[in-house]
Each structure stands twice: as structure tokens, then as C-alpha cells.
Image 1 (spheres, rainbow, N blue to C red):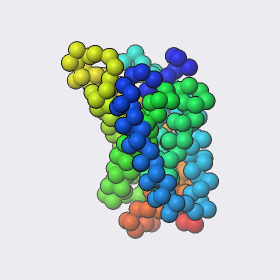
Image 2: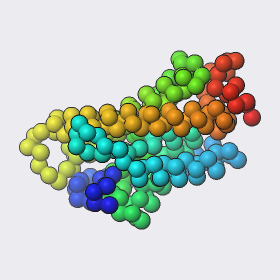
Image 3: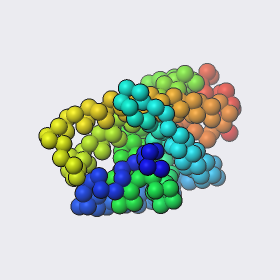
Image 4: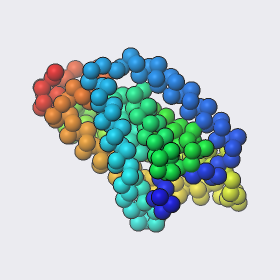
Length: 239
């Protein structure tokens, strides 16, 4: 797994900053558990398991970013937010990251708070805010849903990458020689391409689910905008 490391490894960020973000992640997950209980029903509970399993599997598949000489993978924040909502979605991402760190050595255990904050909190929160906004202005057709998923995934990935830049600025163990802007630029460009890949995966997955079972897409159920005759739920029927 050394060549396929997807998350922050032990020693990249110093102990005090890692501990700080571990506390932030724990508080955020406690809030997600409390709020997520209100969302759980007969549809959402099994869907959460499926979403976590799907994200876990797809995160193990890397795609090359030729311009940066690195590879990228699905973060899953936007996908989880769209299918199971922000609270349960954050928990799904956290579970995936914990299993990957403990079982596969993918990312340092001591750095879990940092990774969960970036991918489980920042990415999910940014994605869901964009989803809620876009679903108010875009038609709830397959095309509108695909655009919403793509944009939310792309932007959430780049913002999550900037979360790492902030963490490194606070407690990075290697001296960049004052070139934090260079790190931010590298992270932004590489994760822009990663975000494009994530956007395509997210849009394809969400639209596929919406056409078959629109009632399983949390974002469609939570949106307040009335469903029009040409909307996605009309394709599969409202249950």
C-alpha cells in the first residue's frame, strides 16, 4: 500500500495539530450521530451501508493525474451527501477512513482526525451546501441532477484539499521554505483533475440511482422545490 497511499500518513503533521483535529473530528461525528438519528428510516439505514461499501470499494481504485505525476481516487463526500444526506454521509466517510487506516494501513491512525475532518466534514459539508443551492435553481431532471452532482463533487474535493494545506500550515513537519503558496497551488491543480474524475463518477452513480429509485436519493427528498412533470422522480415513480 506504500505506493497507493491515499490519505495523510503518520508524521506528516505534528502531534499537537493532529490531536486538535482529532478533537474536531470527534465533535463533528458526535453531532452527526445525533442529527443522523433523525434521518434514519427503513430506506436510509440500508442505503447508508451500501454507500459506505461503494465508497470503500471505489476509493481503492486510483486514476492517474498525468499533469501532476500522481494518482487520485474518489473522496465520496458529494456522493454520500446526495444519497444519504450530510449527517449520515459524514459518518459513512468516517467509517470508511477508519477501516482503511486500521485494516489496510491506508493513512496513519494518528492522522485520522485530519483525514476525517477533510473528507468527512469539509467535503461533505461543502458538497451538501452546493447541492441544496443548485437544486433550488436547476431543474430536477437527469441533466440538472448530473450537473448538481458534478459541480458539488468538483468543488468539495478542491476545498477539502485546501483543508490539508491549512493543516500543513499549522503543523507540517517538513520545512517548505516559506513556499506554502506552492503547496496550495500543487494541491489545487492536482485535486481539480481529481475532482473532475470524482464529479463524473458521482453524477453517473446518482443519476443511475435516481432513474431507478428516486426515493433513495436523499437530496431529492430533502429538496423543497416541487417536482415537475419532467423531473427525475417521474422517471422511476414516487414511492
